[in-house]
Length: 405
Ligand code: PMP
Image 1: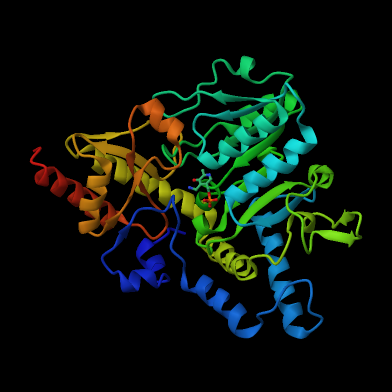
Image 2: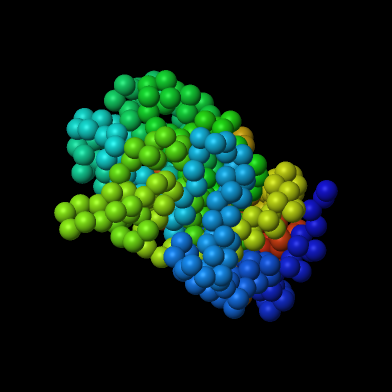
């Protein structure tokens, strides 16, 4: 089935209010279809209550709806029985959970953690904190001008000391789809645990956790049409069972005495306190919506829209696209000669084009590129060629405004 962005757009109430908006900041967050908003409202209107507690009908309904989303998430990534799904507040919390609990399980003084120069800050800072705490070294796979990993020295980066490898599946700056399987193989050969930051890959195509053979995969609901405030950690149950809890409180315990406590089973051991119930339930509706379109169809459409966008942008005088990776998703970072990205974003806003200007929470990449910021346009299923034309028109107007042409 060919995906029609104009038909899809009809499902999103925000575009009824902002009829001429070209929303091109999808790598940051996506818009929400009516069915997701309705599902969240249904929870509050019809069965609002806490989960796992009320022995009454609406409490049981809320628990059923909340718990049933785990199965949808596991199915989404083709997980088998070896994996469990844990709800968090976002990719950031999922990575912090791992940096806390997995680190405690596997790290000792002198060990090494390997990440890459392409990471989002949420996959850098938690490991810096863990390294400081456990006396470990943080190593980085470098990146090339093309916006790809340079794995020529990988043998010196993955050694017997490497205990954790945590890497970005698809770049939020260059769009690069990284060769994570190759790195996972090398990491597994030395017994390291492997984490994939799939915040930018899960919304855009089929991701198969068994095929990728990683131990943990993390992503955010709000980048895949779901509500904000819900994230996911899918991990090997065997390792999760051995990991100590992240936060303490209600729900994550089995027994509590004045002296000590025992822990609930996985996944609840990692879900302290009242969770983001409405958001999890809303995410379930987002997964249904995406599955209905088909992740393969989404991927095929995005390839098409990316090619059109790259072609049209390359015709804008003075425009430089950062990176040129072989395998790439629908993210384009660029600069327009002589115009500061923040000024450019403001002019584009006047043309009703929403793009992101900044370091995209990836300052090591900006340092490598020797720029303070870039403009980033990122596309999703409701974006059409019309949005690209609007972006290009906005860029040409900016050029005129700054009298560069
Ligand atoms: N990793 C990547 C690759 C991202 O793009 C983002 C969001 N920009 C994050 C992690 C953090 O996600 P969140 O803010 O939803 O926790």
